[in-house]
Image (cartoon, rainbow, N blue to C red; front, side, top):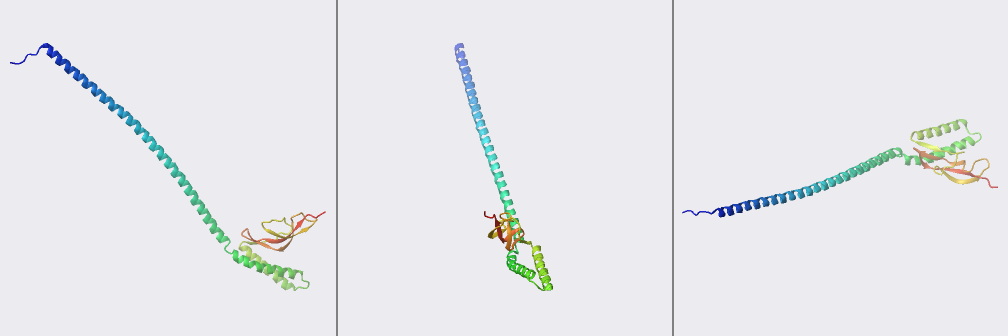
Length: 204
């Protein structure tokens, strides 16, 4: 014979079942809320990490750009120095030869001066000396050699070497009054300064 349940017992069981369902729903809501909270925090941390990585990459890119610019500038400087060195090597390759040639030019100057100032000097010999002297200077000029003969010019310490100073009322102070030995330049660069006599103001 089956047990008969009273209406009271059925109500108790129903209330218990309802309470259990309510508790389960509450637990599920709490778990969902917890899960939602963890997801938000993870999202913030992930965004912060991405921002940090992006900033780091930008910094590295800027550093690489600066390094590249410096490298290009250094390379350009090296190229320019190399080009200048090659150009100078071509320009001044004959410098040693020209310096050795200066003694010959000095001898020709003295020979020409002597021929022009010696009374009764053979005219044909004088003409030949003058032609030889001019030919020598013209040949040297083709290779970038030019004389420094600054008579009457202002004294320039870059091109002139003062051997003596002479008082003169007819010239401005620091004027080259006489050249004792010509100077020479090679491609615009002084290879020997001219030895000169310079004027100074007359004393009272």
